[in-house]
Length: 120
Image 1 (cartoon, helix red, strand yellow):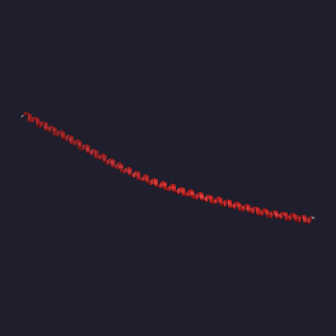
Image 2 (cartoon, helix red, strand yellow; image 1 turned 180 degrees about the vertical axis):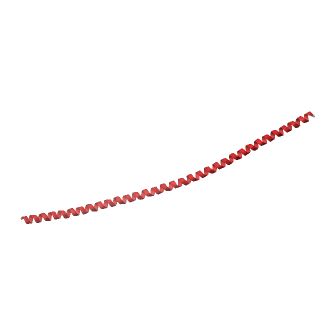
Image 3 (cartoon, helix red, strand yellow; image 1 turned 120 degrees about the horizontal axis):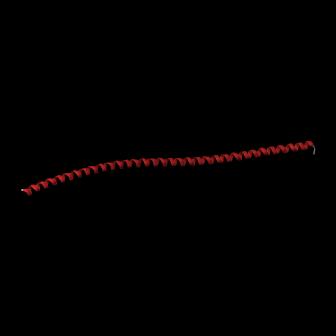
């Protein structure tokens, strides 16, 4: 084999290896691109799930805040009702005290009449 044939063979081998290396690199690049796209799709799915969960949590929080507001309104109404009842109770106690005072005065008048009748 001559030097020219050896050089041609070497050049062909190098060229074939270069072509194969480029093909391998293209294939690896394609695999890497597919993997990156797969990861991106999974990230999008996770982002979608997280967004959905956050919306659900926000809705639950809004519902809880509305419920809490309703409960606070009910509590205020109950406190006002209790205050009204306490005022009514105080009024009733004052009326009862006035009635007792009136009964005591009537009793004093009746005792005074009884004494006058006993004296006569």
